[in-house]
Amino acid sequence: MTRTDTPPTWDERTQLATFLDYARDTARAKCEGVSAENARTAPLPGSPLMTLCGLISHLRWVEYWWFQVVFLGEEDEGPWTDEDPDREMRIAVDIPLADLLAEYEAQSARYRELVASHDLEATAKRPIRDGRHVNLRWVILHLIEETARHNGHLDVVRELLDGHTGA
Image (tube, rainbow, N blue to C red; front, side, top):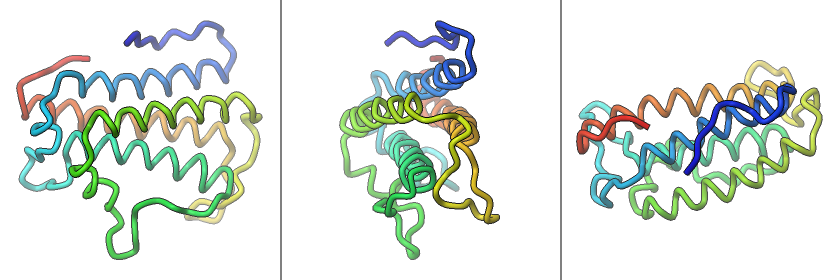
């Protein structure tokens, strides 16, 4: 995998897309070489859902929520429920990490096309919690922030599991 945070051109869309891909690639890199058992293990006693599988599943479903549900206005078919709002992290331990990573990559490719085919000023079909309709630029920036924050979690979890650092 080749990660870069240096875009091939300096227009805003390319810079945003490059940084989102860099954050995605970092998440995948933090999972390289981990054992199947460790991928499902939650090493933080106070955070039983904080597994590598759970975090990758969460990143996948967070992008789904923001791109498909909020931005495109599609029906929410995510795994969460009112009774179990973190279900995407809970069920992930029953899915091989390689499958979660492949699904995340395939979805990322679809969303790259979505970003390329819409104006950054295009308004989301659904409002956010405060009733405002964000634009695609905001969605991308939010996903960069969200993915980068969870990369920190992936970093800590991985180091606690097997001592692996870096990426």
